[in-house]
Length: 337
Image (cartoon, rainbow, N blue to C red; front, top):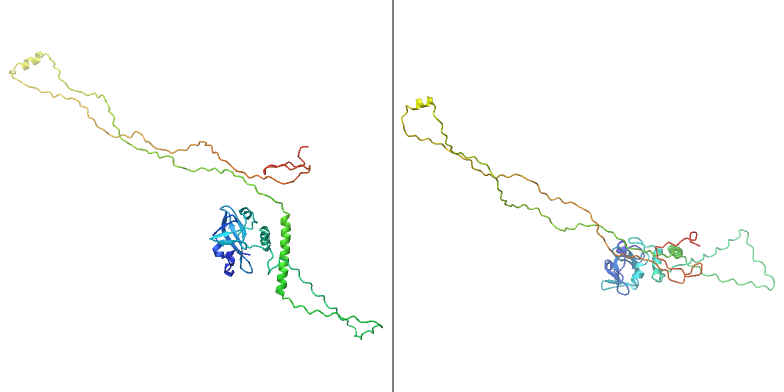
């Protein structure tokens, strides 16, 4: 049995169209959502849809549900089983061929009848007719004389010859018998496997993620500052000096006429000259640096544990104690006396 994509061209029209099933929601007997139909499996011989693989979650697996007992209405596939039973169904993967043994296991898991009217689970081949006795190669004699008073028994009528069975029918019957025998052995081996439950626990996976907490700007603005400086300036002034005339100068100057005269002296002074110029003083930059600090993360984690219920008793006759799944009981060689 292959998925619907591989045999859709050869499938016949049935009450449930495989094209309508894929991608639709599947619900259990209580109306709770099981998942989405992922694959539809058709019968190898008739092409009739028999199984649907339902995706039970984003991180779940595909569970097989029977279509013979399901109903597709209102864009939903109604499966007459509980959601918990469907999720614990045998896991064979998807996209592959379902072997007869796997299909038989699914029938038994859902409590369905594995024998169909046109294909019984097992046939025993009919016994072959016994070969006729070989004729004696010796000479043929007449019948022996019967003793007095002896009556020869009447020969039983020979049964009519059985019609010859076609080779294909014998091969099909032998194949079905071998397939049923393999399924029976597989079921016996499956029952001998230990029953186990996988316990899970939640664990923390803490990572870090960057978030913007603010923006820092670097803005330059102009301020005015009053500056007072003391500057030394030089000024010129007049000082009158009287110098006596010498005898030699007196003889030379005495011949001059008395007249008026004016002499001028230019006086100067220094005044402050203010000039402004730009001088680079410093560079101001923003540097992003990282530092580490510790924060406390508090969260609640769930863990699955197992308790054994029932009238199981130990070797000493007392009921066995309940233990969590992660406990490790001591072996007899190391257990205390």
